[in-house]
Image (cartoon, rainbow, N blue to C red; front, side, top):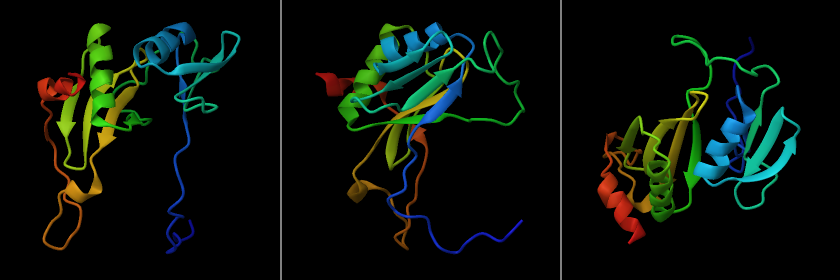
Length: 165
């Protein structure tokens, strides 16, 4: 394998979308559209769908091409750890929490990482999902050298929901 390039990737590079294999397309659409609030942009029969926020062509692709009726990967196997959905504000993250609670969806965790606040859960196909917002960079924790010093602390969900008042 060739040695990695020492040149950094362009600072304008972004992760554009994620495409998930699901067992039941309609069940996945109920979660991503009805619970999280994404909009259905296109559906390709009963095999694939593309959802987005704000009219973008798609942020999340869902398909059953290789997974119709399938089971999630067993523990101890490789694959996606989670997909992270970035919300623009803390209030928007609070709205996401309220949506999850209204739908009876349990969190696996909730954390303050210093640079962000995050909710962790599973979608209906057991894919990990992180819902988060980034704190302003001027409040990110830093060490004596000025390097980012992230941490993991419990997130106060009551205070988060207070953003909706």
